[in-house]
Figure 1 (cartoon, rainbow, N blue to C red):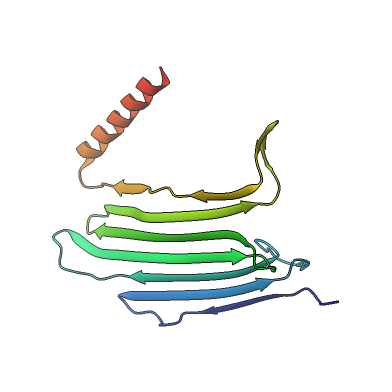
Figure 2: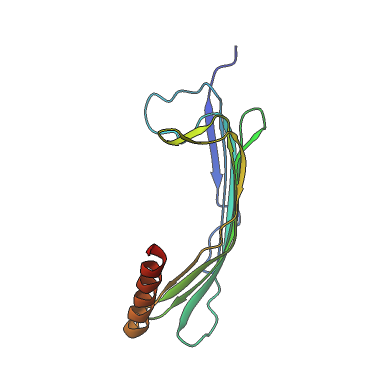
Length: 164
């Protein structure tokens, strides 16, 4: 009978510079592994993760730096059946005044539920494979308080109208 084990391998392949970061990780955790001390996010996985972040600092008026980041997380179980997968492409711009924009150009998430997931009382999400693809956009404005106040006022009005 094989002995359950967990193994992690991480590397910063390509290294770190002021304009490029590359991080890669490989983990294998057997289905019957039971850690006696510490925390294990999940057992029964062969998890691969790679993240690349390109961070140029072009001369843009008011802009400090740009970020083009992309990652892939691929996590099948020990029998190579996909359980979780996510890949994302993000664009960010940071400004000198602290404002920023953080835009997920693509965010694809795949999750397999082996058993129905109980949300509340008799409400269940059926077992199956789910593909999710939101594209959120985040914007933070510090220097223009009046723009920020107007945006909050507009969102409040929209929420009040939709709740009627």
